[in-house]
Length: 116
Image (tube, rainbow, N blue to C red; front, side, top):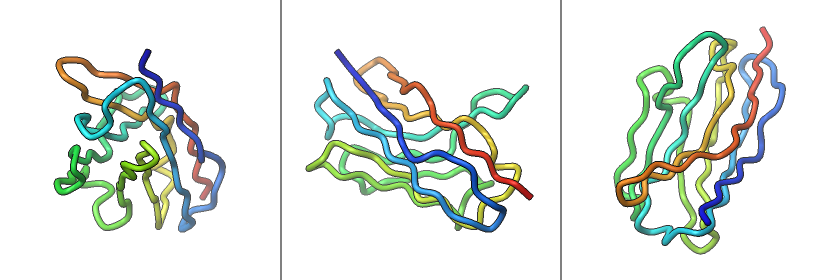
């Protein structure tokens, strides 16, 4: 059974930082492309960042480039998203994603709220 469990969300002031983590189980971690997506109220879910199985290829949405950093720890089966210079428009539910084989798996989401 695949499980993705996010942690680290919360309320932060604009300009602040937060670190999200996602613990994965039930998959061969090195074979999964891991990612973070977000969904703001009334909006569609959008890509934030992805990282390849070996960690060598990362991709970011233009809106977060230079502010967010995705990383993975294969020893702990975790993927993290370090978020800095946060803006009110970063407010959303953040979801961990594992692209594994032909399937996508999702965590339950964690709320990030940035106050102005």
